[in-house]
Image (tube, rainbow, N blue to C red; front, top):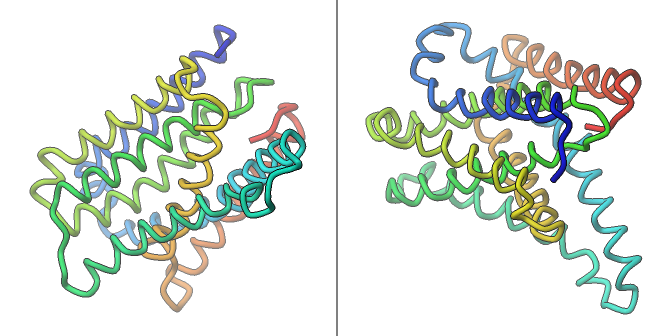
Length: 244
């Protein structure tokens, strides 16, 4: 994929922000201390905004293009990306359900599942529209915030293994996904499936770890996160002349 010089450095900065979150998460958690629940609630609001205003419209764009290209296919096939979205929901729902009901899954299974999640996130970041270089950095910040909640969840499940191995795996997987998207290793069909699957996974992880508890302590930060992402979309689409 072609980049301008500024676009490349902006994209690299965005993925660096994202990858540094899991890699440095133990330090982040210590620094945030008592503020962590509110930060996770803000991250949840940002993630919900990202799914609603970026990933779902992107799935719609891919689906419209596919229907135009292959109108003769059955309707269930034409809307297959929404089944991929549902698959993302189911995969991460069952991962969470196993832990919640005290049927712990092997550490390696969680590591592989969330490394795939990181890979997908990195590849989606690389596929931000290229009519301007500005969106890469706020997209990296938004997804990095979401990974605060992901890492909090994983570290709670496997604290020692997460600190030693898993956080590095997540950061590296995000970088590999970004590189694959940037170098054009993934075609549009693969990216469409990844976007849809990631959207379902983000939705489950927000509901599991970042959805606010009752009371204003986390509800207000969650709403702030949503409105921050709305503001970001308005700025990027209205003033930077591109979509995010």
